Length: 575
Image (cartoon, rainbow, N blue to C red; front, side, top):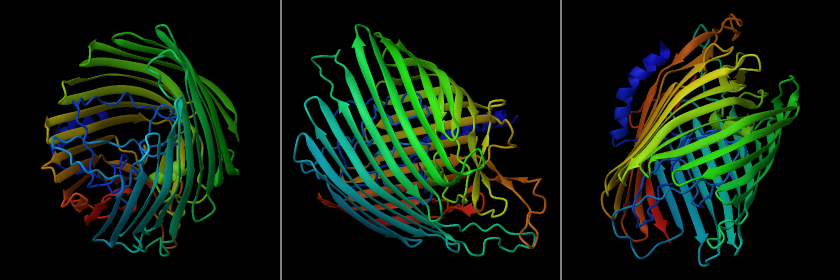
């Protein structure tokens, strides 16, 4: 069977987690913080505990404490999970065995150049002179050009942030603007080999966003005090043509400890409208807002945590519906601090977002259909643990039932553009079975290795294939602290084979048989990258980053090869 064949490949692929190459497709699902010479050193015992089970987000994450170093990528096509959050992600602090210099700097500027016409510029600054106030900003520019005609990418990011800590609560926020420019450079051909995309028009995405959060501070003298949070997330996202998405989300939580258990609720409302897109009724314009409430009760003992509750979700706008999903989780320590078992069952609604779809695939056609995805059931369970401070791991299996699973398919009239199709409905849902595994190893104080493996198997309801969706993904990474001044990183990314929906075209550019599309295979790929930074002085550093070292111009989406081997190098100045 196809799923069994995938499993037989896993043993070989898992060996990649030990290599000293770093997974970096130019746009990865998870990006790293920018290469910076001014590293942080945390002197403490390292314990590589892995994250809890990953779940689809339905509202802004009220418990996520964000750091302010911006996550700036070096790739060309965004490839992110669906997430309405626009805030900066958590700053990953890498420990080092070497002694930290007494001089630390909060600000830096970076400039670099490379092949493929690459020009990179970054700046980050923060005022940290006060114990209870912090504010600053950042700016970035990156452009690259590939070997194909009009294979260009340009990205700009600018933003400002601030945080104020009061005795009882903390307020923080961020405002920013992101721009991505590219072209429809894909070149499908007809039966005579003539291009079906002679003009290769441009595309530009503009994203203006604002986030803010107010959260209560923990009082160690009153652990039973009421805790709360209120968060807002708003943005306007538009392309070069007629599409524009306006979204405003407001979410909050309350939690009260009563003796040995906690009682609380998470609530959120997400109001969303998309102009220039189609709704399920076939009309122009989409209103697909979602409101949710998650009341819960949580019990926590010395070696276990149990949470019971429900997800109450209401969809309103073009269509109205109300669903109640169960929500139960358990985390039990078989060997305290070393070996855990966990599991749960939940469900919910994921709002369809033009902004998130365009981040995954910027080659969308005009007038795509937008709808929400219902996760009718999500049952999961697994084990996790660590061995001292040098080895951490997690393994999880899950089963999901989805209604309205989004898939990218090539447009029949303009095959260099992409439509969205959805599989699964109230009569027949998509069945998704998967296995996830993570590992983190500290070989020595100077060497850290990590990896993640995902194996997925889908039983589709109506679509012939899971278009452009790999059944196996493997990432591996390594970090080497060669000395106090020299650091080396490496990544490797493997994506399994995927399928695309394609048509044959006559010399007039018309599909020969529109009712009988073919399934075109997109080969699997391995992407290796590595980077190094050298701190020449306390303030001046040199960096270099090599991407796609195998020079494999692989395709993530049909007709769109990615950039080949490219190198970025330059200087970093901290102050």
